[in-house]
Length: 211
Figure 1 (cartoon, rainbow, N blue to C red):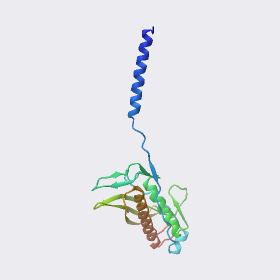
Figure 2 (figure 1 turned 90 degrees about the horizontal axis):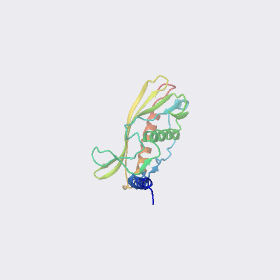
Figure 3 (figure 1 turned 135 degrees about the vertical axis):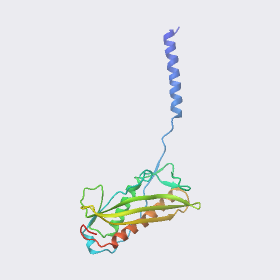
Figure 4 (figure 1 turned 90 degrees about the vertical axis):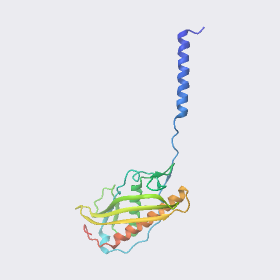
């Protein structure tokens, strides 16, 4: 015959295992995520003042509000309601994606001696940065459209003097509603915005440490 103490111990253990098993079954499973890189198309070399060839330009990570500063793919389904596509992420946070794309575009343009990032230990002549005001899908009369807004600024890196500012906006209709189609539209809009920024910089008269 099983002793009373042992029997009670086994009963408590079995109850504990049952509770633990139930708790484990109701715990939410980790969300399965798919990551996307930003599609990009190489830009053509551009004509620029000869003085650009002696300059090193640094591309800074733009400032952004909380949701835009994440790796989520943001969407405005209606009005000012902010949401994000479920189960998908960009491969990096959005400000870093835009910074890297702008840097690649400026390298493609071949108008500067060198193009560096703010994460590199290089002393540049000028730097371009700014604020990312939009990087999202907006539904216009039921149709999805990518919209990117970048308020750019250029300044002398050594003195910190603000040299020039400009707002850039790029929009691209999404052909469909599937996430890969949304990602493709983001790539096209970012290419268009990068070209605008590159052409803007090429139009400026640049001297060493002075624009």
